Length: 56
Image (cartoon, rainbow, N blue to C red; front, side, top):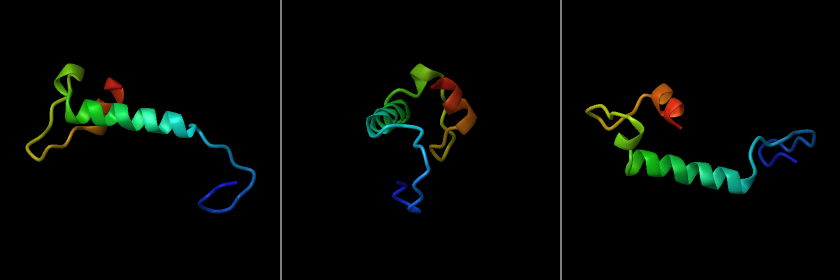
């Protein structure tokens, strides 16, 4: 059952453990290793979403 709308015929794309792992990977890339993935932040600290998704 969907925790948001209550629908019972839904399927989740990721398991909780996968969501946690993906979130940790994203945070690591953005906080600590953007250069390692060839990502450049702009003056405000933003990274292009397309570049980020391609790097992952």
